[in-house]
Image 1 (tube, rainbow, N blue to C red):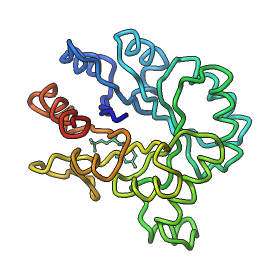
Image 2: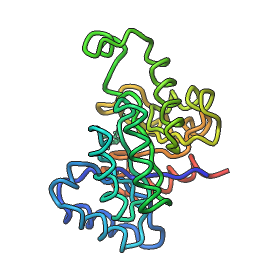
Image 3: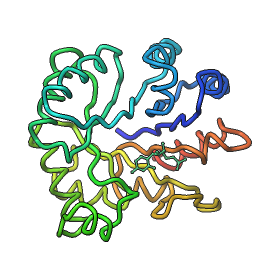
Length: 231
Ligand code: C5P
């Protein structure tokens, strides 16, 4: 199944809740990132969950396996619907994260960040000394995530097919970098429309400013749903 996740990149709880007040009938799936989480604390998650939204808590954990295991138990206790770790933390780290989810709240979908879209192949080679193509790295990290028992990965929509080819079509791809075809790209470089993301095979699209900065956010959200989820 496909769904649209709104990236709530606001700096305060007040702004976030005021934005969510726009939505009365449907309660969209929302993404809470580290900026808001670190400023407001765990209560921001429970408050939004209590309002009836599904929550993707995007904290991208990356540490030694034992620390990630313990931290992930606390994340799972919040009852989040989706959360993530960095695949570069190793298979064992991802396995420990998944174990924590299984012990505390098995319904939480755990996914892994492959390569950040801010990392180009050149930067990957120069800074990280990874002498592989970006695509090979993404496919390899996705396979590692699958080996560790995770349900999917975060990747560019342009990589969704590559991930499906490597891990099968049931393996989830969560893809940011979405723009309407009549809008500006902002700071995103490799973008696709919601309709194109559907065609390539994304499972979930993460959409921020095209909805949060729209004159009518509900209309923009509905447009994403029609393009991405609609038959
Ligand atoms: O406003 P915009 O639609 O560009 O927001 C996209 C969201 O997805 C932001 O929260 C951004 O941090 C996140 N993201 C991304 N690229 C990644 C991982 C996360 O744009 N590779």
